[in-house]
Image (cartoon, rainbow, N blue to C red):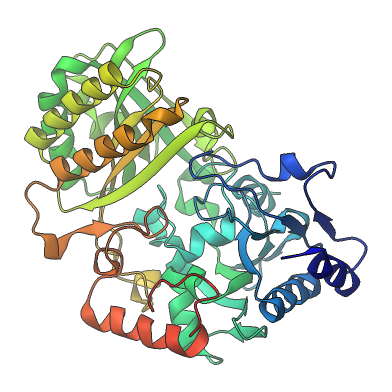
Length: 450
């Protein structure tokens, strides 16, 4: 790419949109991401201020054969490119709530916290809404409304042909199906219409319960056993995390962080078997929708090296979890500076088969209720390969009772695993590949599925 492309692009987009190149004020800032892992330096960062300029940028890039990637919150490990351009959507964002239709339109680079605030005026706060949704959308609300992609009503997408296409149940319905779980591979999604729900679904007055329960790390087996019984036998919606972590004041501990959609006494009754184990400490409090991810703010700072993987599991196994705890200890001992790394089991109680769950989507992991979340966090680039091996070993341990045919990898955090792990069922994979050949045969939006 030479200066001629930049000069030509500047003529095609409005003055309110920016093109930043090396040496420009703000260029270095625009490259900041949640993780510096595999960070590349593009030749330019384009910040369109409107949909028309996004379209023009992609058309010009296709015409000049310039590679490009989109970026919103900067959490995606794939929002960086060498010898190409980053299309940074942070200057184009809008939320339009239609209460009469119980829907919301999200445009461009809207972040989670911005959407939460817009929905309540009357997965981390800094995650981009659109990429989060079109890649599946795991959240603590899954027991109530399914995965986020199951609530996509329509979308606008710029295709590899440089066209802005509208998709819905009545228009390009097959592409809507693909957007609901695999949208990142078919174009740049500039807008989503999402189904909304009354806040009372969360709990009285839109308030849920969140808790923390700390245990000594040595009690991993019995804590996991008790939690597994609570989760499998719970007839009321809940979600949460069983975390292996290092706390600055407590050292290495287990932390159970339940989220319960109901009243405080109900949470206490449901999780009483855990409290009966006499933890180090425990507490719970009310939490609103706006505060949904505030407790994860410590994970959101940009920079340094972070890797996050999510692996679907068919159940919680105490023996496997005990081995996972030992692996976390080994990581901290052999890889200096990894103290902020956290190994987690995330659970969601079963989602109703009615409502959004009836929507057919490309996302093939609807039945997964247990996830292994591996966050590795460090500062020394010399540890890249060694830390990756710990991530892979953690997955191997927790998949110990699963055949390879049943392996599940979350598509929003992995593109290295076989596509059959990320999209389940031969028919789904075949249909996705067929749609990829139709809408992006040259792989402008990655060569995945080709």
